[in-house]
Image 1 (cartoon, helix red, strand yellow):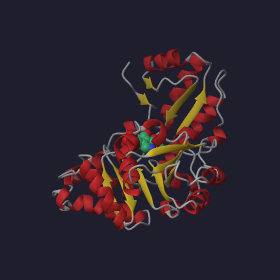
Image 2: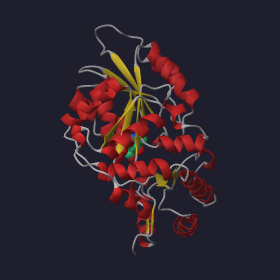
Image 3: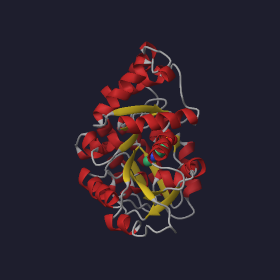
Image 4: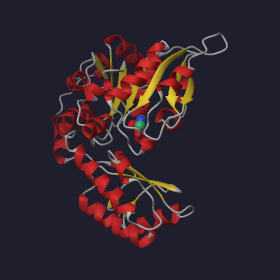
Length: 342
Ligand SMILES: Cc1ncc(COP(=O)(O)O)c(C=O)c1O
């Protein structure tokens, strides 16, 4: 059956007709010369919205995190990351391969928070046997914690502990606007404790490509050089930045619909025998739930038969809501799962 409900990730979102129009009308120039007015607008707008001096358009969240780590650190430095963070588990070790950086995993609690004492403990030794620890990376929302948003106070507490140890602070905010909408705060409040942040345009904001890094002018200057070295100095890239400008104006407030759908999904799943999930833990657009061990491949194959796509986790499965998922799609999915797994 043709796919009808795609719950694999919010990265599968397609641009709306209005976004396609914005792409069509974007003014273009050579961005390596700084001449693309649409990219310049996107970078300035992003920086303003996140309370930083400057922005840099990058190809992906992974590249945004990578150029940020490279711009904050030098060869042989250590970066503290959450042990269940995307940077540590899903970015191919790029910081180590390309930057000679050592990633030190700090235990993450079930809400995506890194206890300040664990951050302090990781930097008590400063003798010559250990690499200098220069950077703390925080993830908000925290993907593997059911998309938990971290508050400004939590972020401040982690950042304070990092600064005591002489570190700078980067936020992997792939879904930062989901966090802001979920908490009902300005995204700038969440980035204020940090030196830099990355957010993705190509996830809940529904753009086809791209992420933006923000920070001080000096930091962005260094990140821009790394981006060039990584081969991502792009030319008339306003064709994609145009979607980003449109998204920042039009796609943020509607993220609450995705959160409502995720909550509805979690509540429905909690009613099905054999499935366990805590709906209270779902605060944005990601739902992780437990299925009977060994059933992941068959459940996902049966769902596919009914036009529902999920990644085949086992015994933990993930579903992500987004612009392409309606409340009716959630109803359809719940009926299908009840039938298959219940
Ligand atoms: C928390 C987090 N950070 C970074 C990324 C990387 O983004 P990209 O796929 O654009 O490289 C992802 C992707 O899912 C993510 O979930």
